[in-house]
Amino acid sequence: MVLKCRRIAAGLVWFSMAAGAANAATLSDGDARRFLAQASFGPTDSAVAEVIASGKDAWLQKQFSLRSSDYKGLHYVDPNRGVGCPAGSPDTCGRDNYTLFPVQTQFFRNAINEPDQLRQRTALALSEILVVSGQQIKLPYALANYQRIFLNHAFGNFRDVLREVTLSPAMGKFLNMANNDKPNPIKGIEPNENYAREVLQLFSIGLWQLNVDGSAKLGPNGQPQPSYDQETVEGFAHAFTGWTYPPRPGATRSKFPNPTNFDAPMIAFAEHHDSASKRLLNGVTLPAGQSAAADLDAAIDNIFNHPNVGPFIGRQLIQQFVTANPSPAYVARVAAAFNNAAAAPGSGPRTTGRGDMKAVLSAILLDPEASAPTAPDRFGKLREPILQLTHLFRALGGQSDGVWLRTQASSLGQPIFSPPSVFNFFSPDYDLPDDASLDGPAFGLFNASNAFKLSGIFSTALNGKGVAPDATVAGATGSKIDLARWQLLAADPVALVKEIDRVLFAGRASGPLLQALQKAAQIQPASKPLDRARAALFLAVMSPEYLVEN
Figure (spheres, rainbow, N blue to C red):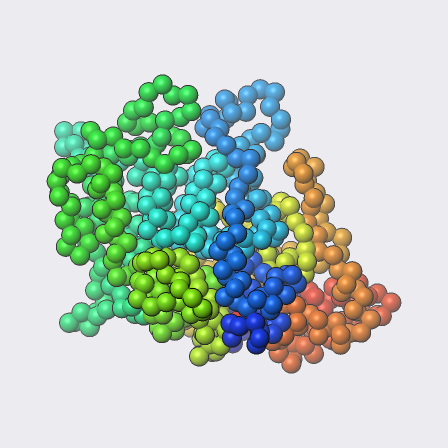
């Protein structure tokens, strides 16, 4: 996997350039950097020192206790721009209240600067599985509230994630659960099946029945067995009827349907809920006469307790944090932690019941395969654009207010929180371009055009001067990676390359790459140490060995 990924990435990178374990006693600097590349938005010198001093497990426990960095300064705005930005408003009113700009810039600011790295990485991973999109939900306070679900429950229980997502007005609008009415043959009304279908297919159990290791269960005919049918979708669609948006601030009465409002969970109206019986998963039938809330909670329980959830969600989280093609045994161990069938690796108890996210994350990040893969040729993953940017800035000690990074991520096809559809920016099952037997999710975004764009972005990031702050953004500081320490090292190309290997490659760069980096530095005259440093750093970050982490 690593070699194949790097070969594909290499072709795109060279096209662009032509065009222009877990205990403190045994952890090395490289071990810590590799772990932090998986568990955070990138290693920093201080974080590396912390992991070496305390060990991986202790670092996780500390991360579990840190407060959320959250999204600040975002509040309800009237969906009518004429009301929210009346005549005489600042020119930035529309940008700051009716686009995702403030949420997206805060995301990058938090990812680069805040200490709650694992919580934020987990929230990002969950948001790329249980998807809503800013292409439909354009109000920043709405997206901030939706992302808070993942920040608040990153270390809680997956059932709570499912329930809050189901009642989120952002999800209600995105997948049509808001104002989903009970059947009315006279008016030709049937419950909308959109959310019911996607919560099963994408957010919880998937299309096929799974073994605990993530492999498909085969029927007597040797074919995969569906995990649900159309009648099941209809049952959930009927169970989810009767919910609408919460009343807007200052509203004197509430009705069905309420106008859009994303400031609180959706509310139920009994007269619009289908109180008939419904068939759900695994032959479970909800009895007639239950309330909207009782049906919803029973439906969430029915999904949450399906045996597919552990391997289906667990495998995708492994892909987000560690490797695109985890072994069946790795998936099974993570699924066991989800199922509370086994404690996660590490010292002390980890589980508080089925769906405990701390147990799942510990199982993923402390698993032996995360640091010593059993099949190196299948191990690794291409960094998605967001992580390409954050890893670079954190590893090299950069600072950013998020404005420039937001723009660059968008140019690379990943405008944060605004994927093109409910299927995210890329599928977890996206085939590696030259081998359909392997998955390469982030390759769904990586092509020759994006490789060319990335070369320009990295060139700017490594110019030594940074990107000036946007004067229209309050408190803007711009984005900059200070190359002073690298400029000093450039007097000795061997020392420069050794430090690049340590910081960017966790000491694992190949011999040919190290030789190429040294040659790139030496081409520049000794009288231009900044140019030497920039040349070596640029070649390093555009190399397939950097872009494909392993």
